[in-house]
Amino acid sequence: MERKTRRLGWVAAMGASSIALVVLAGCATVRGRPEPPDPAVARAAWEQRVPQDFRGSAAFAYVEEDPALPRVLIIGDSISIGYTPVVRELLAGRANVLRIPVNGGPTTRGLEQIEDWLGTGHWDVIHFNWGLHDLWRATEPDGENRVPIDQYERNLDALVQRLKRTKAKLIWASTTPVPEGARHRVAGDAARYNVAAAAVMKEQHVPTDDLYGAVVGDLGAYQRPADVHFTENGSAFLGERVAAEISKALGRRRRR
Image (cartoon, rainbow, N blue to C red; front, side, top):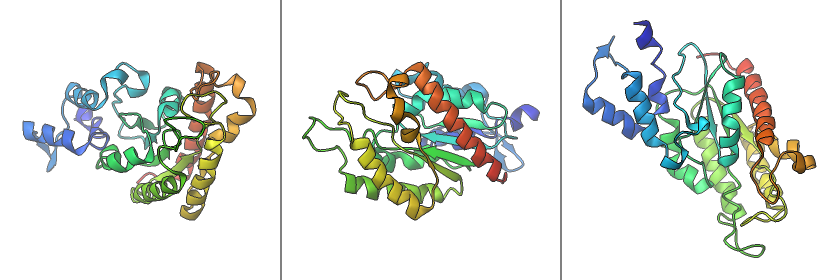
């Protein structure tokens, strides 16, 4: 029974389609509830959700949850992929740290996939960001942003409203800087999009983990040259900050 209890967290981390496959396969019941599958089955279901290119990445490793611990979800793009393993390591024994099974991309992808990402279980803390893929330009410096800033603001507002329905403690991560020379992005756009995001977070009363402000003064120490992505040390720096913000949120969050 102890082994079965430790697997109760698998359901919320899986999308509805994956759950349906398991149910159709047939499950025993424990006290009227479907019995979680063998860990190997749950692991296989998770790996099916992860794109081939990300399999084997530490950020997308299957997490066998401890049901005694709170649940944390990280939503974000490749910047968050870089810091997820650091956050997971720093919060080991304090929280089950999971992430969405893909690159979060622009807000348009978030609107399309948010239900699958959230699953059906509860979350205690959700740390989230969209931005770098919204401000992407097919041609720079004069090409249009993939998601115009006014639409970005509306999309973000809708996403925050959905996230608030989870009753989780929400933490918005400001979009990290675009350095000079970065392909398909223009320096200064991240700051503009962060202003739009800040208006949403103020209206929705969501606190901000200011990753932009944490690194903008010394990008050479953290970011790759002419690239929005971070070095290993940079991802570690961001991960330490993210873990600290999540830790504070967990301290304010009573276990349901």
